[in-house]
Length: 159
Image (cartoon, rainbow, N blue to C red; front, side, top):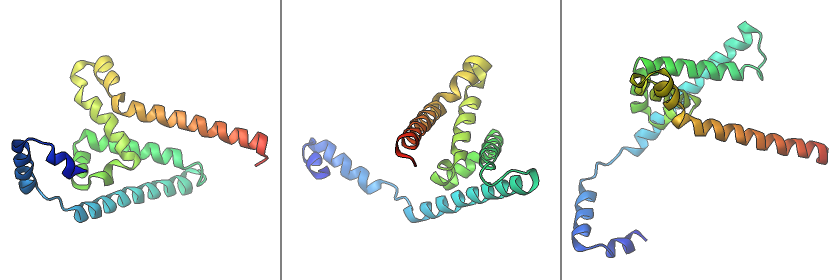
């Protein structure tokens, strides 16, 4: 399919694509995957430590420790983003730092920091949920749909 598109291009565009392809920087895919895996795993390891602390020192159960653990991870991420540390982690790890819930915290606080010069209401408040807003809406809507399906199955199916 790509070769078919390439044949339909004018000769100058074909030459440019060939030129660009030969000079394109080759990304170390395996190394990037390993870094993402290790950093993402380390973030999850820290989350497990925080969850264990909530269970053993604050009286939560394993089921109820999840929410404060997520909130703590997001707070830590926002704190590190404010000092510029999390951006360096993100440059090193790529998706390993953005896929866990910490990526959500980073996206919210990054937008808030970027627009702080526009004021607290229109700058910070108006822009910090531009990226995170759709995630929140999708999460709430998905949770509603799943709860609705579960309720119907329990009432009608006897599960």
